[in-house]
Length: 212
Image (cartoon, rainbow, N blue to C red; front, side, top):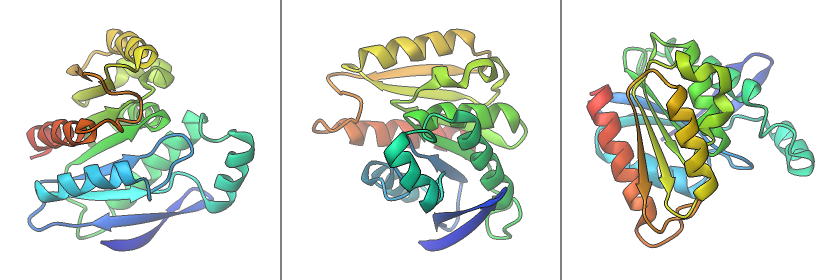
């Protein structure tokens, strides 16, 4: 794993890049509300992807200053436009890095990051080949939903009833290959025994199929 700094507009974002050899693709993680590249859940999924031959980039969508403001006001975590802009900038940055420039890209979004991932995928239709959302707020992608071309997997916990409904509404607006996988008895954070392992396996299989 290499610690990196990514220029994104007027901000500089901290990230952790793990390159495997040979790599079948590169998955960028867009974390959710009040989270960061240090999210243990996303790190667990990333390790599963690494073991399957996928490079991963976990990075902070907010700067430390923005993060401290957000903890008090929550003003940035639902700014899907800003989060998607940072994801687009980071995607373009990867295309300038010799080691990873040729890898096909996928997005793994969680919570509000799921909405941001879909907005970014709608903008970068020629560069993003797959999207997986974990407990994602896909509905927050709004008008971008019909423009997404990348095959999309929406993973939702069976007990996360509101988010199931929001994802079903989002899927109805999408024109690409889109599947919802519901993990029985799991809530929003997939903290139940075995739930996160199921998320990781589903994500791994989806990315290997569409990036490899």
